[in-house]
Amino acid sequence: PTCRKEHTREYYSENGCRSRRPVKLAKCWGSCGNSCCLPRKTKRRKVRLHCTDGRRYTKDVDLVRKCTCTRKCY
Image (cartoon, rainbow, N blue to C red):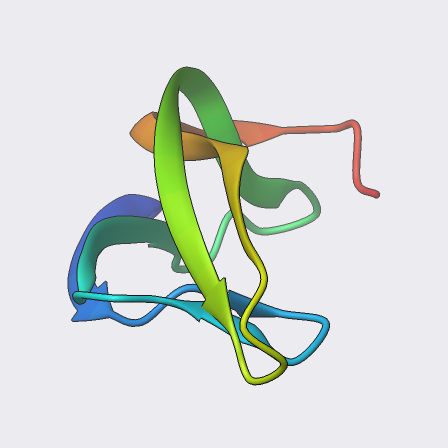
């Protein structure tokens, strides 16, 4: 199995809003045979979003800390 965490640094976006700065994110990727490569451990972090209509709000985002092969594929 080659399930591992890949670091990225990108803007977090949703509903026409985005973070003011790029956010350190991570994604699980790789092969696990008949299983799926998914997060095993996450950490919640607050991200401040700025919207095109002038609104601002804070969103709790789950950040991937560790990845593992699991039979629960969703």
